[in-house]
Amino acid sequence: MALYGPLLYAWLPLLVFLLQAFHGGSAHSSCSENNGGCDQNALCSDDPTTGAMKCTCKTGYTNTGCDDKVVCTDSCTVNNGDCHSNADCSHDATTNAVQCICNTGYTNTGSGSTVVCTDSCTVNNGACDPNAFCSHDAKKNAVKCTCKAGYTNTGSADNVVCAESCPADNGADDPNAICSSDAGNDQRKCTCKAGYTNIGCHRRVVCRGTMISDKIDAFPPHLHTSDSCTANHGGCDANADCSHDATTNAVVCTCKTGYTNTGNASNVVCTDSCTVSNGGCHRNAVCSHDAKTNAVVCTCKTGYTNTGSGSNVVCTDSSSESNEACGRHAVRSRDPETNAVVCTCKTGYTNTGRGSDVVCT
Image 1 (cartoon, helix red, strand yellow):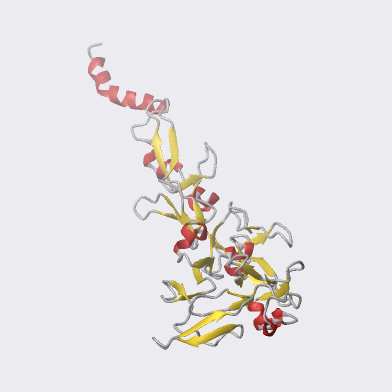
Image 2: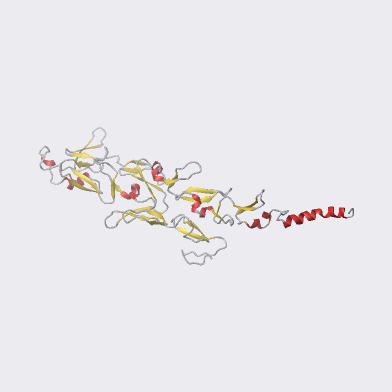
């Protein structure tokens, strides 16, 4: 027995190692070889209690597989990385965490890490001048500032500053105004005749008939006329129709189809409807005019489909926010200029389709 004691003691470490191997133990972590069989974009770890291996997707990746078969996919290709529908999903250059950045024409009205992208024109008038209309460029959706009627841009294309349009002098005399020169400063001064009201400004008088009728004898004979709308269009805006009130015969100015009154009831200023709140069109639609009637026409931008009706255009993203439109082997993105959906084959796959029909094999 004394002979076998030293031999047994010498072989004991080998016996322990063999027993560990037999019962599933190991001198090395199962993650040390081939990342434990985890996805290349996953981190492999061992449970300290059970010893079971665990695969966890790295920052910027989402598990699109299941618990026992983790598949790590770029988070930006899964529901746009949970970013707002009007935001682009990208990754932080250092941490690879998801970043949500509002698309052109939209402003982040969220707080902290919550990005909420709102039409810039609804936020402080898109930073446009108070006397300007905010709209969007049809191609890039960038904010576009357009001076209201009666105002002129005295700034630049990139910095619109709207100043009153009246020239320094009176220009051409209104036919329904009495004009004279001031002896003191030689400046022209015009005053509307009786029965007319100045709807222009003090430096450029525009006289509109307020109440002219053959039956009103209080006006001097030279002011009587059969229809004040024939004289200087009744003082109405060039894009308005001139008519008369059925009761008082006063001039009534009504904006033509495709134009919106941006003045008030007594001073009608007719502005292209497309420059006023996008003509009432959906935020993802382009406003234009019918070639025959000049009525507002709303057309969904590239990448969007009308899910409403002909008279109520509602523009919805043409492709689902999942990757179904491109197929499981492709990544969906958008062209930064046209907003069209672009499908790009993932690494390891080749496009065998043609043109816009991407087939990844």
